[in-house]
Length: 565
Image (cartoon, rainbow, N blue to C red; front, side, top):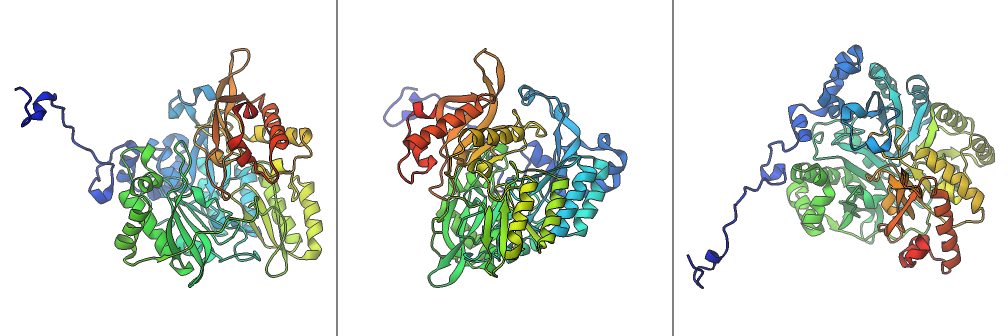
């Protein structure tokens, strides 16, 4: 048939029409599992695996574990298989999971709000020494991670943690993970509102509940009333940020849809003000939207940030109000920019009750069970029964009398836990890396520690706040995109044409002050061996070229590629 004005389609070949599969959204009626993860979650809720761990796997050993439990449901109780020793980064993406798996586990202890008593910290340290070969890393989500955990020991570890009010429940998996909170909630002189009651209520109502134990993927929460914006709210799925409402007083500004990994997005404000007592209900509404409308078809699009990007803030807020809260939220102001660059609470600070808190910096979050036990003892000896972890891999001892401060600071220094760190010690963080992580390509913790030493030796006069974040793979657990200098682990070619460990460099990322992602300079990669030389070079150029008061991120955005190479 010839094409005519009345029949234009005749000139166009007919395309095959394929049936749209949808995005796996439950609210749209797409309940059929569309990938292996959705299938094993449909087959059995991840929370149910605890019974099998206690009654079968811990008694029969590693080889008795069902594969869908081993690499799936056990995450609902904080357990990941760790990397088998001796497997280099070039094999990370090549080997099958069973070839990468060691017979020991990483176990994550969730520490909501970073809040610990010294009794709890002592138990955490004792478990490390007895069951985890001394390992105990502080993460940038306020948790503690063990390694070398045997499945036979897990029930006893749970018993000891739960006896002091700690848990590994939903520390991993497609669940509501640890709720970040200001580590100085309730004690800081400048606090807008104490979010602790909301964190406790969310835990009481929802953590370990099957209402939210099958999400499309992980769900990350931050709640802080500190004007320092100290919980990285911009990169969480949901965040409640302390603000003063001109009519209603102190409360929280609501943010949704932040996240990093290989497709980073800064969270968006919904323009809604939430009073403290309503935070748990609003939190449940946001996570309910994620559960019901989140994309389950593709794991790569199964985070809340993709739904928020597609819907926009206005639609998201409307659905939250109309379908989940059944009421309108009040409009509210945005948080003010923090007055300080550092927001890790390191150093000596006065509390609102007249006592002091002391924040100190381990090396890239790497501590051990013995050190944690000694920190608990030091805190008690100096009058404190409370400690905190931070989202910058730091720790804080609370409630120290003024007369005890100097003695505590000296005692911490003796343990290489300085309350007066250099900018490099203070600003460098690292993920787990190839030492234990099955996704990693390069080593990170030791690399970060040696980099600190080199920079302190080479640039002793450097006094600007600087963040150097080291990640072992592209997944951004160490938040490389929002660091001044972000280092993404990969294999690179050295001058001899050999493939060696190295990093792709991101420069000029930031949170808090003009939050944004770092700049990638075309072709800018460094080997691990060259890393100290590169960082020294770029920081000295910053010192030479910066304008008065200019931050590194601002300079990096305007600097020439030559200056950054």
